[in-house]
Length: 139
Image (cartoon, rainbow, N blue to C red):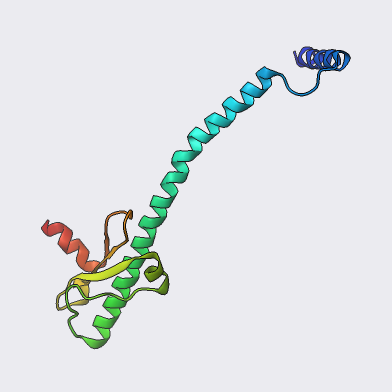
């Protein structure tokens, strides 16, 4: 079988050389275009989803960092932080348009909950911290 295909390809090459044909046949070009079209159809949704996943992960990281900073500040000072107070953010968060805010407070470190929101076109707000679980149970 392999020898038959090889013989056919060799014969086609010799015929093209004898007749002065160069380049690819129309069928070969169509097959390449179809394969490229299939690859593009598969790749576009994957690449479109990558940006949304990256934005969601950036919000999660900002919320977690803010919750850690708020819990540490609460544990060190013992003072109750104001609801809605801006939580600590990294320099990268500000350039990306991410804002964080304390969404619930209480008298213990376990009540700290920080939400992070992005700019226009970003996914929904993300909350992080031990106090967020209590908020979800109440709703």
